[in-house]
Image (cartoon, rainbow, N blue to C red; front, side, top):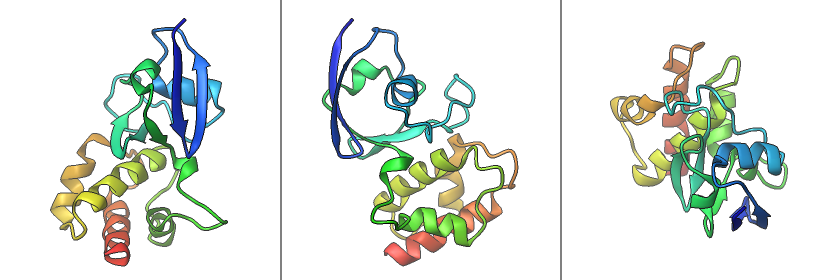
Length: 154
């Protein structure tokens, strides 16, 4: 089994993993970081989005061994000192979630959008989140939350 070493949420992690281990499974099963969800196993829903070296990736399509040497941030790594990340706070404030299953992936994707485009239009938010499915909200409040967080951060 190959050895991997990566930084997850600011902490150095090393492990031996089977070559076929997906990053999402490594995070959930080996590290107990269950905020990253497994929704479809086919890269369609976006519930598994994490950041790898600052870029949002669908962790169900990335092998854990591909993350060797990377800095990975999961939804658990966003908040600190008892304070939510501004995007998390905006989702809460603008009711950008219902069942919450898609929320971690939505938040992680939206953070990269705002980092790349600090003043996105509603259309740009909707296009960016195109690979993230929500079966509850109809996206209206999710878009409002992303735009509110962008205004705060910008």
